[in-house]
Length: 284
Figure 1 (cartoon, rainbow, N blue to C red):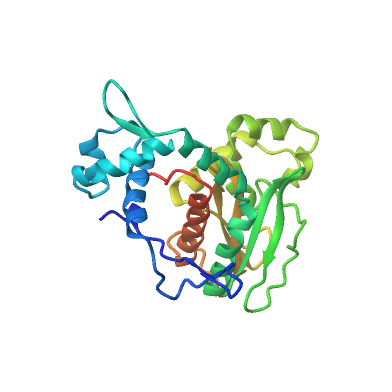
Figure 2 (cartoon, helix red, strand yellow):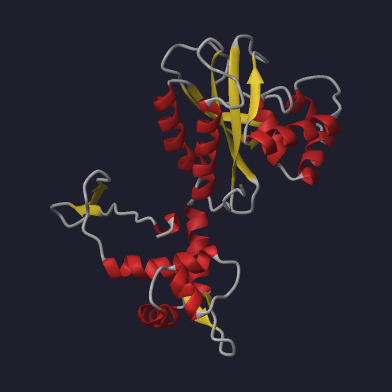
């Protein structure tokens, strides 16, 4: 079965007063198999760019067509799926759209990124920063400290250079070009650049090439001497940068090669958060 249909087993427990308790992800939980089976059909429709025939939809969900059909009848009654009266093909319905929009409205990027960033810092021992685009450019909103002390002037509220830091270049690579041009033309451009005039076109092109080729932007010993960093953009459901994850550490313990496991760890963490925000999987 495809990984797209991997089961998410955790179910909340029930407290003495009947309220749902915290989810224990380590314990096997009782689940409703029919819900999981039907969910595979919805996931298959969500993964397909166009309406699907019963045969193709059932195959994508690894079900016989005769078993898939009753689920589709129920989903149509709920508005989660709709069937074209002429072609007989199935697509997600208006209720599915409402559920998706509600999920997007309830999904806060920083809240989605925080546990992933915490796990990344705990697993690697290096500092991890979460940055968003603020009024003056890339701005750190959370700093998770390294296992070993790392003396850097980065904390919540720090504004990063757009082209002089890995964090800034990750933003530059992921932002729509028209928005980036508007930023560079604004009075706040000086604060974002943290430098005198630069060849913005060349810098933007270099940033895009860097992230497109390696999945991360990199800083080696600058702007902070002796400190290396990798940064990766987290994308939202429209493919726009919601935030940037940056991992940094002392050069003696932080290999800066593009093939470094640390680069892969940051790239994978950003992809994980992007998926939580509804971004389409990156093409490989």
